[in-house]
Image (cartoon, rainbow, N blue to C red; front, side, top):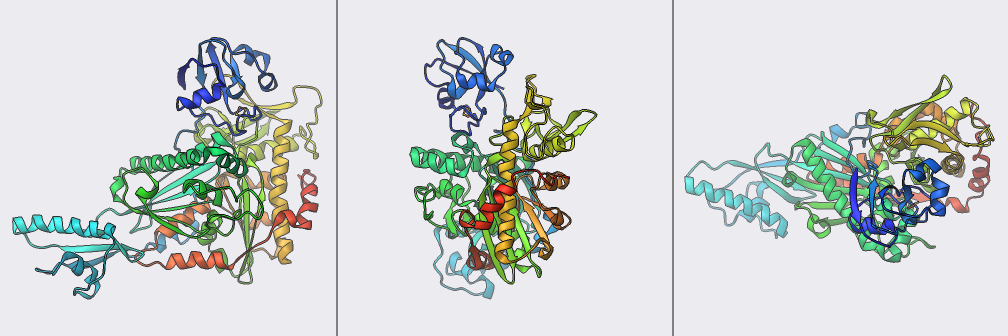
Length: 588
Ligand code: FES
């Protein structure tokens, strides 16, 4: 809990932000999401209409206000509840054991013995494989590594010691390190999701994951979904959004190093994936054409840069930004396809990344058909009264037992809110208990029209309301109708599908009975479902293990080139089934 003193007559949200405080104001300050709730401990802040709609009389009495609708009329002391969204937590993961990822670790080091009197160190290093000397111009970053070698040699000359064997480590043909056989060599993979950033620190020689973490995307304070981020960027906040992403990646790398006990200077490579909008924001690229037809991005290609060209941290490695397929089927799906090897499946297989933007791809007959559907942020806790990201304390599992809801939280921490899997469980359990009708309405018509789940640390009731059910209905129908339309477009049925990969932040924790019960996943596909976690992060990790050559660059390009996108909003089948799939008619 942070306590900040302010003396201001402006909107409290703006004033708090100016102090560096973080509030996940995902509705952009319109008073509808409730995520900017603060408690006024002393001083006077008049109750607004938005406050009355959001808080009970007892909560108003206790000082609860929405910061975006609060205009202090005196000096106040305000308490900001800890949302957990600033923390880095170890809940990000992907199905390492279900893939060949560890077997893909490439040979990195190439041994060579330094000659007694080379014409120059650079010439001997470039000719190392053949044992001779060749003339090839080195990039400055490579030359810096050679310079370190020369420095070490200088010490050896002074002491007249025996010259050692050295190892040259290359990435995509370029020298990234010259040193001993067992020098630590790490890479960092990053997936920038609209709601969550996932990080993994990888030992490049072995492919072992040395540390991983995730944190809620702090750009949420400028909008919960891709469209609102684009609008925010186009309203003059592009640089601020870019700065948030860059700072958060710097912090994520520091968190990984702290967890693994490694030095940041041992990181030699960074691979970043994410949806097209997130990557545009990271690179400070104009988003003006992303939000309007014909939705043309600045780029979808791979981007290579030095760390210092983008970030302010102390790394000096190369950064690779993975390629996307289209404006709404981004590099996160490319990475997911790469990770799951979907194209290599002999029978048709589907990858569905359930998030704010539900991206999906079907591999069949050597082709990849992909599309995206606007699911909204409900699966990531957005637009849900007590919704939150997958942070410690988020209610991730719910059961109705003996007339009451029992909850399970991430990290067994005190309940702080409800994340996506908790939302799905709550509705399914509500249907099973007869508290929710197949239409999505509460069975009981008298107030309070909400389901009590748990109390939070401040003693406030965490409840699930009618609007939350509606949000889930729209989100699950968008995903389900998109999946059905994708299969219909290819002329395939559920029985033709061999494997359904479910990716996304909540992949591992998804209760399949609940997912099928609310109609998110077709029941015939449940036995064929592989909960793969964050496949985008897994793809970035796999890319890091490229080794000396650049074969994976080519693989990614091939995936992008053979992917064909089809547009759901124009699809008659999708539009007809979207309405049909809103209710919970087949919940049993
Ligand atoms: S309710 Fe205040 S930012 Fe959404």
